Image 1: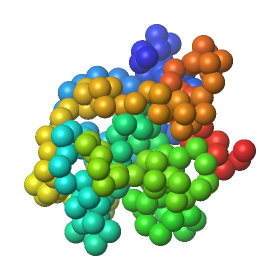
Image 2: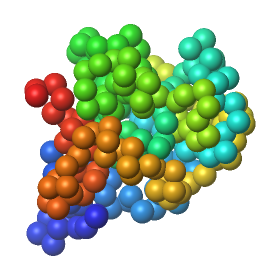
Image 3: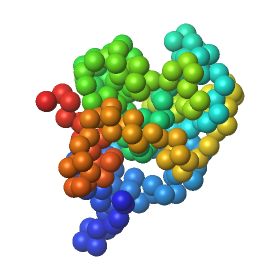
Length: 210
């Protein structure tokens, strides 16, 4: 799925090249999957960093949701069964930060905008229902954003999760491919011409123009 172009030496990711994320993401991707935290600097916003953390066997999803709503957890809580690859989340975060800086977000907060951007439709409540963490979810993916004005401490979040933090290489075991195909209404024809991730990001990126 990831490879380096012999002409440029840069990572190539078929259709995903269009989304304005740095090419070196592709090069370092396999190494990142082995880490507990993925911390990524956004190319268009050099002062902004996105940290991703993945948990399994989560026992307190309902309490985590409550803490997020109360502000004691400042992050986006996602259902990882809907996530094909960390790049999917980075695309959503990149767009959220862009709209935040333009003052054109469709939701109230930066983190809710990330959840909304994962959806292939413009229905905000449906986006939260399908991509956000539910009370009984056994796994969680937490997204943190930091910039020049706000720093984050991932360890503080880890301490609040009653579950096992796992490397992102374990994500395919949690992701529900049938659910993903249904959510994004993917067709067999699309599967023949690109990867699942290509199709998902295409749906996310074009929902504003379709």
